[in-house]
Image (cartoon, rainbow, N blue to C red; front, side):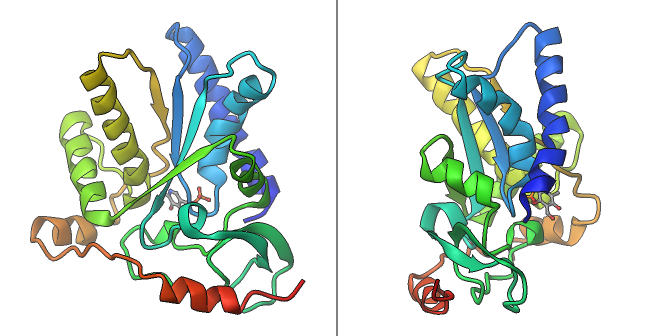
Length: 223
Ligand SMILES: Cc1ncc(COP(=O)(O)O)c(C=O)c1O
């Protein structure tokens, strides 16, 4: 995922900022799911600007990934190929290794082994946080959202929804007031087979062992 794709998508965050302003609000937390990093960064970067200038020091940006492809939460900050074939340029990024093959989760858009270099650098510098979820609780959140909002979210986006719900519940319990902004990166109208699997109980939670990660790490290019 090239950095310029992230920058193009900052139109999302710029617009969200204006919408928040119209609502008389500013988020405490900005959330997005992360495949290669573009929709999350597109939303979060314009807000992170305010964190970096000191205007909004407490702003939290939270990247959400699948536990089956936990690039930020379990990967390494290293030089690696951008593609599985080893033909794309080598960049420094969080990676699970270009030979890593994630389980066949329904959020196909979150199965990329690496993350964009800018996003990776921000994570390394602890300017953003990351969390990973398995897919059954993610679909639970997706169905709750669909029933509440009448919008069927993409399985990728449902990762962000799950985090937003968790943070809202935590705030409710602690009595803290929190403004939570998340990116609904796409609809799930073509993911009905995944929803069907969730409803008929055949959706699997993939717990990722350490060996496949170690194996892929051993195949990182020597730089
Ligand atoms: C709906 C949806 N959201 C999120 C993503 C993840 O990509 P990125 O992290 O680059 O935004 C994808 C990728 O295919 C997607 O289809």
